[in-house]
Image 1 (cartoon, one colour):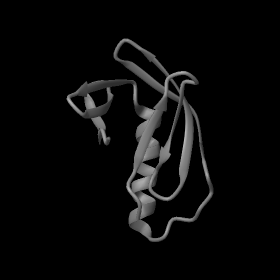
Image 2 (cartoon, helix red, strand yellow; image 1 turned 90 degrees about the horizontal axis):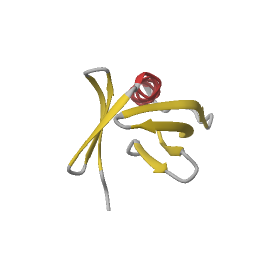
Image 3 (cartoon, helix red, strand yellow; image 1 turned 45 degrees about the vertical axis):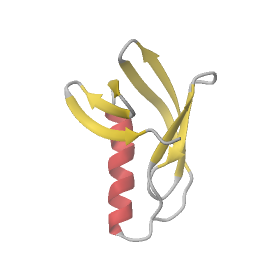
Length: 92
């Protein structure tokens, strides 16, 4: 299985990445520490095995629930209120 990742294009306000089985794209909006994702679309590749499918479903649900973020050093964390949903490490 490939690594889940997300990349942001601030010019087009598009987020793209890999959600565990499929590539995805989504619009996003940022206002101070608030972050919202919209209109998530994925490719339709089949997940190989239940573990990959659970990771993908969880990741996509987390995108839908995200309403704020925090960046500390090289770590980006998505939150639903005060509840952390996902953490990402910046790569060069």
